[in-house]
Length: 423
Image (cartoon, rainbow, N blue to C red; front, side):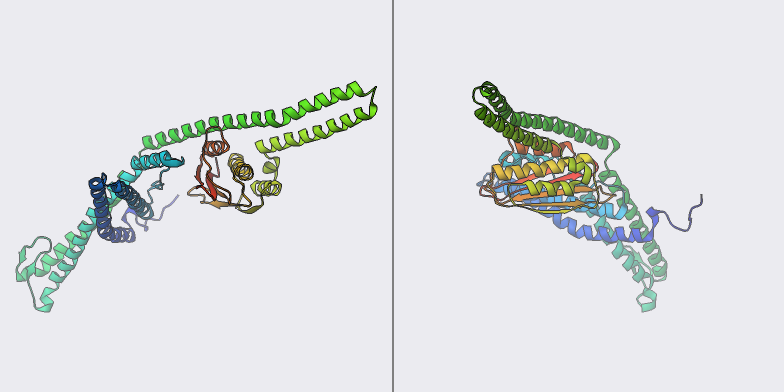
């Protein structure tokens, strides 16, 4: 196996080094402004926190500005060096109300990835100013080296202020230019090394995060199964079971009358037959609610089309999926949409529902199924233990996804879910 020795190592490629230096120079200006603004917001917020609580708004603004700055630093470093830095995602508790908001702010504040990004940005800002200074030194050194040609021989060495005699202007300018270029090259390598050290999580941190995510998924799966079992028991108890009891009682009456009043007995048998067919239909719907067979046979698009056709509320369905995903992922999205349509019909008093499903991501970043369900109902939906929305949240969590509910009083209600395609 041969290799092309004419291609320089990635770390030493000139264009990558020039790109790093240009970015650092830009970060010097932008980073100074961003970090100064964050510090100003924090100091203002602390100073005015007791004045009608207005300081809290400044602190929240500082928190999310810091997150935005950290996100930019993550994207800059990964786009330039390709270290495999994980994408920074905004934290959310997924819980509604004021308590959920406080939980979200706390999760964002303790996000280690955000603060590592801020640290990397601060270091990059300092390095950027050094780059700007060294660049001016290169320009000054070149000017000093060519000063004899302009008749202005002599001058001072850049960055040092040391005077250079007329006969040493060329040599001094060349040496200073080489030193300045070396500083620039060293800064670009140092930025590469520091971003890798700061932003790339350690193996222990990756394993800890994977263990935490697995624990959350397991808890969500257990909770989702409990909610589903409770729903099945409720539907059986409130629907099928009383109907079957009624069928048994009707057949008992028919048996008593079959000799004395055959006509009445026949009517009772017809009534029992009708109730039996209704019970079979309810059982079929209950089984379909657990898992639709068409989902395995024809995929999520066909299953959702059938679901929309049976809905009591008109559904505008827009599904665009590139290819099939895992059975777990498709079942989770199907369950979310089915339960949302049921809620829209039973509780939201909606007259129309819009369902949008898309494929997102790619093979490198990970393919996802994104779905949004929005109805024009009365709103005010809340996640209550044991309720339908609780089942949705836990089902999505068990599949490794995220769910966001927005349901202000008066409507509309929208639910967005994102589920990994390979759950």
